[in-house]
Image 1: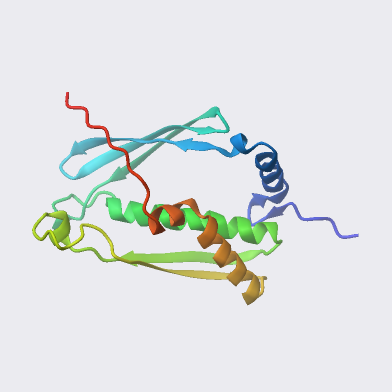
Image 2: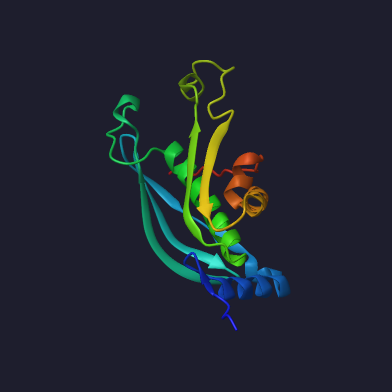
Amino acid sequence: MRAVQTNVNGLDTEALKQTMAAVTENPSAGVCKFQVATSWMGGTQSQTRVDSVEIGGKQKDREFTIRTDEPCELLGTNRAPNPQEVLMAGLNACMTVGYVAGCSVRGIELESLSIETEGSLDLRGFLGIDKNVPPGYEEIRYTVRIKGNGTPEQFEEIHKTVMATSPNYWNLSRPIRLTPTLVVE
């Protein structure tokens, strides 16, 4: 009798299934609160701190920093990715988790997975030069390259699932409400 493989693509599929069952049984266990704090570091540089995440009402400590800057041509020092590149990296990373999880629970072993993303924006919008030019993207294009022991039909099914369930795909493909607060000190 063949043993059931519980680690596929570096994911513990049994733990994933247990998490899915726990969230199905108790939906509040699946509520995640993410937060970051960004500080200006001079010029076009900033640093974002990630201190913790709340999962199912339980605080988990995390200690990460994310630096951003602009290319020299946009008045930066080119010492870190710019916010647009971090935005795209967040989209790609989120979708990558979805592809890996989708393949793993189906027992599909991946050989490779990459996502290439691009978008163009017009600085006339950001700089306030032309009010008819949006400050952001009108379109972001991405290509997923995936290889493994799954069938084309299985990969297509996983692709559709990722587009339906990836939080960052959702966040970028639909308007979300932003609730700002300004504190002048």
